[in-house]
Image (cartoon, rainbow over all chains, first blue to last red; front, top):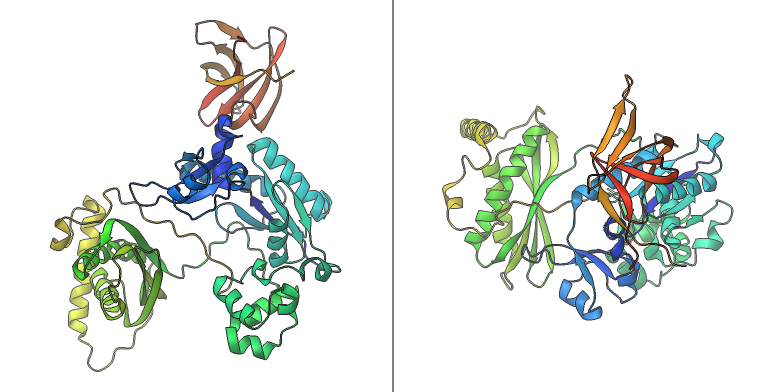
Length: 411
Length: 86
């Protein structure tokens, strides 16, 4: 039986919520931007009036202001966005229990078994009207027989619109579109594809498996499958909790970091939170990844394995710092640092030590970390910390950690 | 004719709550102390206010023969108050 999948995308979500709550903003160009003081001063979302001036997501506020002098800057209110995201999901829940969120403002819905409520298009249209009436927000929806095409459909016509991509006519409808429109084809993949003259979804669909596998690995085969309408990934149930794959924390510092000692302090701070979360999720890290963004906004990421999986913040910090010191060339000062614990193992997973492992010292470190964790839990996060962290740090005072949004489907 | 301008005004409301927990607004206390009795509750649904912004449970009520909307937004209540014409 052919599936009926919807993808609902709330248009210009943050900006739409702000304009809905304050109708005076409605006809003005509006951009929701992070705080300049905390050095998050970029455009997070904008409404259509701002878009008409060429304001784009991710650019600095001063750049946006250059394009549109009367741009109204609004600070983000994440609690409001969470509320409206939940309310929208509650509406989707009237039609199916298979609702898989993709970020705060997008969801896939499998309405295959909801035939008594109408066709895919009819259900999508009812959802569109309901969201508009109940929440005052617009959505665009894609209706198709798989998740990839449903997502593609929701991007094709915006705002407040529905696009259907049917099994018998998808070739005519979407094969002429740029390959980069397809979920899974990011900037790097697009660059590789266009280097070989593959520009459209149709051209990607007709490329040989061997060639794609050779150039892009398993992602190459996945995107070819997507282009041919063969994606069969299920829409998860709304109560499905995806397994934790990595635990990370990142921060944009108050001022740029200029030497190794400053980076060490920031890493020590970040790994404390990671250690706590690893314990909460009963996981141990089998690897570490660091992501460094310099003041030119160029980001570089490195990762390495950890031979004995650990929860120890000290060990994580030392590994992260060693990785940094080995790879970073200090051509530019650093603006933000992210540390992630990767290759996660269950806490009680048996570990094979080698002959030279100092098990006693590991055990001592583990007990020390557990004691520190206990103190932090009982008396607060700042009750105990490394001495080096008591000196003046470039860590933001209000410890707002960068939001890490869910990633794509390929992994 | 252009639509009359409205503003969002949060108001104190007297409610009846039955044994099932159902809420029925009875009185609206206006800012100047006037009290408006709700004659009839016509309809109740979740809706957004396109005039003044915000959304919640919208009660369509009759007050002195006029139909009006009263919104329950989170823990607070608001009405779409008409701005005086200049």
